[in-house]
Length: 421
Image 1 (spheres, rainbow, N blue to C red):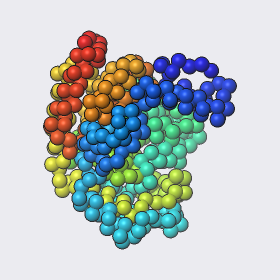
Image 2 (cartoon, rainbow, N blue to C red; image 1 turned 45 degrees about the vertical axis):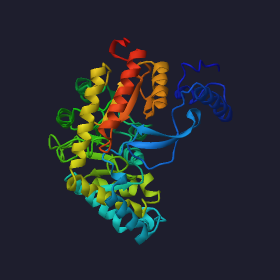
Image 3 (cartoon, one colour; image 1 turned 180 degrees about the vertical axis):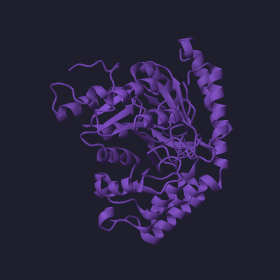
Image 4 (tube, rainbow, N blue to C red; image 1 turned 90 degrees about the vertical axis):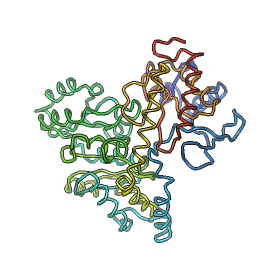
């Protein structure tokens, strides 16, 4: 196998022909070394400071440890650093220790786990929830348990990888992103052919920052006797008058059949949840294998209980976030950059060329700005971009500094819409 490393992607190394597992690993290391030598391996930098709008990174190629404006964190409201969240987490450790020591069915189900399940369910005006140790397994494990051999799962083509993993080996069809006409064709064809039909979407899509057409989608799916599953990991705390996410603007609390999400973004910790009917939640507690056979979340998760409260107690954080988002997106547009249809705190600058995207990412780093290049297969080869997330705790000075860097780059590189310099 002889790949052109300049045009290659991680996907090319998943299962190359003729190489055993160790040879594949060795060849992939050659590719990683190439990226590193070219200044294009902008991943897995070591962070030596608390997460926030500015962080310390150890980048040997740039001289070691330095300070960078961070645009990579999904801690949208800055709650991982909130003193009351920290205090609650510390109390949990002091009261119960650093771990739970068992899975939920055999001794690892603590009072704070029940309180967390009840609180996240009530947050969405529902009666029942189950928590997982990660948001990824909340999605993958619940789908694995839910979808039977005679069922069909219909997915938006841009849902998160965790949802796609939960659909592996299942009867699955995919519809074009937010294309409800395409979805309806699939629903019509599937109506009498499958026992149960599930439609899986994100609330906020993690690469483009755009929103599901949720009200129309719910009405359509229910008209065909289907069920809606929505992962709103990036919407909670950000979208809606009170931060309940994409479900809130149209009051769809009781209409989205299954709501999933994570505690690792707005709530500033780690873990995931599924909110659904009490019967379904009880089913998951005994049939969802990654829940049943994993040790439960640590007592530090008591910090999440306070973070949920803060959504209502301190709404000013969401207001600050949106001041930052509006300022940043307006600035990027004024430079002439393509930020797509984002309606959230996820802001892409679309470039559409692998080599150019890598070059921009490297120049951002050298200017003291840390933002992730997103390449194929996360997005198509013609849709590469710099993906950024804003926080309520970014200052206007930091945002303006980033805008100035992009403005300078746009003068030298063809990254404006139309490719002009």
